[in-house]
Amino acid sequence: MINVLLVDDDDRVRGKLRRLLTTHADILVVGEAASGHEAVRLVQMLSPGVIIMDTDMPGMDGFETTVEIMTRKATPIIMVSPTQDEEKADLGFRAMEAGAVALLAMPSGTGESHGRREAELVQTVRTMSEVRMVRRRQRRTAASAAAAPAGSPPTPQASKAPSRVLTTQGSIDLIAIGASTGGPQALLRVLVGLAKPLAAAVLVVQHITPDFQGSFVSWLGDATRLPVHLAVDGERIKRGNVYIAPHPYQMGINRSRHIVLRDDPPESGLRPAVSYLFRSVAAVAPRRTAAVLLTGMGQDGAAELLELRGKGAITIAQDKETAIVHGMPGEAIRLGAALHIMPPDGIGALLAKLVGGAAQAGGRAGGVNKP
Image 1 (cartoon, rainbow, N blue to C red):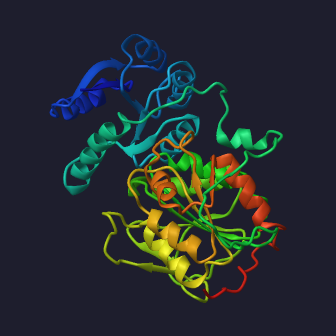
Image 2: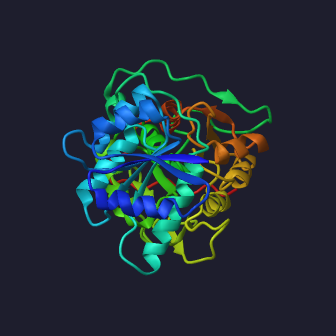
């Protein structure tokens, strides 16, 4: 049985969520809180398996409440927000920095989108109930941590399989990153570790509900101080820029380093899929590429990371200790696809070293090395 705590100052919203969740035999609503302070108290009393929390509440908001819970009794927290309210969506991403595991649109209205959101919420509750959380000892967000003096980066763990890769400064001018559940937090920590302006282009596939696609791009750009965009079909990638795969398209690149967006079929039910991006990069530009697989369910991108490694790319997987869900990076490690196994902070430090000196702002990515 999955024990759920509902946190929202609107009793009507809590009622809708309660009715939705209790139609499923494996989910039990064990408590409800109308404020952040009450939520913190009930978490200590009830030890719920999952918390569903509103992003905006009077007094102690969703961000502050998440920080308190994660420092006292770490619990998987799913943030919910009305999609039309950009400020609330931004607050939700801030809460994800603090330790929330997912941000979803509140089910409302009728029709196909309402049914999709309800199903997504129920499935996320089930998934997050299996997540192992670690109590946070310091109340710092990823962005604020990045501004602190950096110590020595964690020592990367290398896979045993041999690999011919470039590891010198300036050896990389393209970074491909795949992430799913827990990815926004991990991706942020990777990107804030990169030098600005950045002498590489970054392509990202992040599995995220389409309701928050625009908010995700804005939040990530504000938090990292990097130019972050939704990718556009046919645009030439430029160093220093981060390109996010837009829903519902598969994203890749061609030999002239232009973005390619296609409505090709989903892969493992996913569009965009990390596997599609990694396979595209492996076909046209593996030798000056670093490919990174971060936290997420399933196996998306794992086999393609192995292909990239075999063609000379530098391949990195997030370690088990820091991944909210170790499915995707764990599968890559099992396959021997990861040259380096590291936490996000270490990944950012390693990429900064490999990318080397900063390019001129707006400069184009270097020429493609054919495999």
